[in-house]
Length: 149
Image 1 (tube, rainbow, N blue to C red):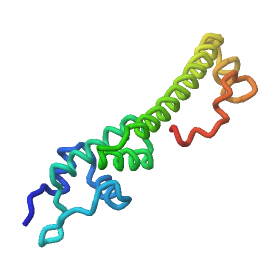
Image 2: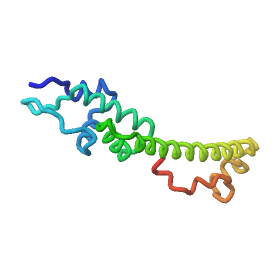
Image 3: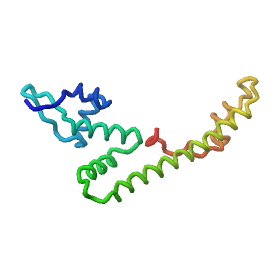
Image 4: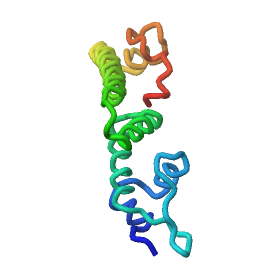
């Protein structure tokens, strides 16, 4: 039997849940694992480092395909890091756009709350704005936010 840890131990060591580890293997972010005679996966130190890399990239919001590209670059350390820089720059632009959108949203919510008379629901500005999109000054609410939610 080869050296390595079980998928449960790999999950604990890397902070990645067992089903997610299986998924990463299925989509090729992890190479096929060595197996014991009982057909149990075995994860070595390089696999654990790769899992930690993937987990950290996901925490920073990188999409699966970007992570795939970054892993390919990591697997060939003699290459220029220009591609990695470009991927990170793209993610940074996405984050900056999201921050700008959230700042506009913050201003709209502050306006809604400030205009609330704290009277009855019938005169509640918060309810009015939520009920009528035309009353809202935040125009980002109509955009597709499924990728960022």
